[in-house]
Figure (cartoon, rainbow, N blue to C red):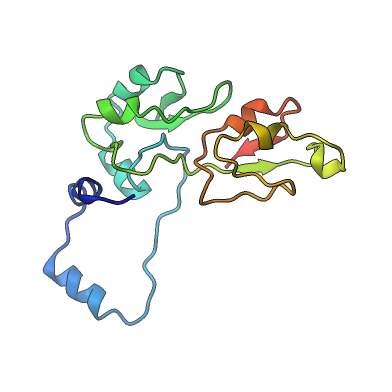
Length: 168
C-alpha cells in the first residue's frame, strides 16, 4: 500500500521540476522509457535507475541479511537465492544508509519463477511441492504465476527437488 512515507521515500530520490511537470501534463502520447531490471535486487529496493545511482556498495545490507542472500557485485547489492528463500524480513532496508533499500518500497524482489522442461508437472506427473510451498499461493496447478501475489521470495525454487525452477 502506498502511503505518505512511501511517497516521501520516493520523492527523496526524484526531483520533479516545473518543466518536467508541464511536459508530463502536455505529453504527446509518447511513452516514457523505463529502464529494465538487469540484476536481481533485494526486496524493498528503489526502482532500478534510482537504485543503481544511489547504492554505494557499503555492504550494510550484506551484513544485516540473516540468510546471507545479499552479495555485492560491481559495488551494487544483488540478491542470490540459491540455498535459502528470502523471508522479506526487511533488515536490509532498515540498515541502508542511502535509502536505496527502504521499508516503504515494495517487499518484492521482482523475481518470478520459470519452469524448465524437467518439471514433473510439465511431464504430466504429479508434484505439488512448489505450489504448496508458496506462502503467497501464487502458483496454480497449471504453473501459471499470479504476479499480484508473487513476491519473488524463492520458496518455490528452494523446494523444487529436481531444480526445475529458476528465478528471473
